[in-house]
Every structure is written in C-alpha cells, then in structure tokens.
Length: 160
Image 1 (cartoon, rainbow, N blue to C red):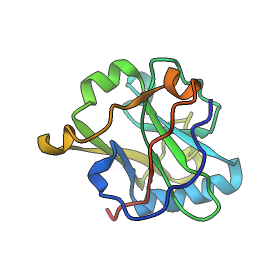
Image 2 (cartoon, rainbow, N blue to C red; image 1 turned 90 degrees about the vertical axis):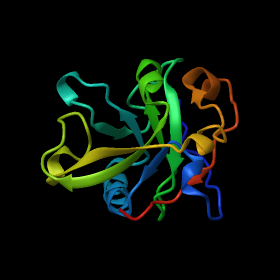
Image 3 (cartoon, rainbow, N blue to C red; image 1 turned 90 degrees about the horizontal axis):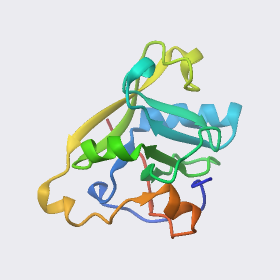
Image 4 (cartoon, rainbow, N blue to C red; image 1 turned 180 degrees about the vertical axis):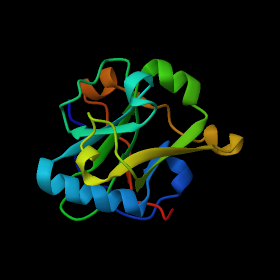
C-alpha cells in the first residue's frame, strides 16, 4: 500500500499537518532515496527500536488497516512524497501532538535505512494548539488509503 504519490504545490501553514521533517532530515532522505528508491516512515512504538521514526523502502513495512497516516512530506528533488505512519493505538496517545522528524549524529536502529550512515532519525514533538487541533482533518487509516480516499497535502521541510 503506497501513499507516496503526487506532489501538492504552494506554501502551507505548518500546523495543517500532524507530521513534518526538518531540512536536515530531508537532505538525508534525498540521499537514502538515491540508494533505496521511494521511502516511507513508521513511527515506532517502543520495544527494541525505542520510539524512533523508522525509515523503510516504501511498501517494505506492511501498513495495517488501523495504522494512521500522520502526514506526507515533500523532501524535494526527484524524491516521491514520503508518507509518515503510526500505529492506531499509538496515535490515540499522540493525537494532540505534531511529530517533527529530525536527524542527529549517532547510530540509528538496525531496521531503519539510515542505520549505517552515522546519523539517526529522531522524533521531536510539540503540542498542537487547541484552536488548530480542531481545524485538522481526521487522519486517514490504512483501510482508508487502501480504499482510495484522497491523500492529504504534502508539506515541505521546516527549519529546525
């Protein structure tokens, strides 16, 4: 199930999505795309991966019907839009936050594509202002995307 389709043009208010990437993360994603093709993220829920955003070749991580599409990021270049997913149960706990995927030095989790690069993806979160939370559309589930529901707009990287 791929959610990495067309780009949406034009500036967007960064509070219009539940997931963003920093420009530093976008640079790493452009490099990883060169080696692995289209990409996707799934926000890990813990256990052996901690709570890291895990980057996979798009489609290599099986999205379940109850997984939630937090957003789609446009990292530029020739890289297709990168979807950002989270499990439905974890979304219930994080629904009031916006996740910003960044990069820091260090070794990432063994399952995530950046592991051998000497950098690792890291999720930073911030509370969505209550007046903005009500403006966000309901997020799509894996079942919605599988059924062909229109995908949300893609967002460009933020400074960070």
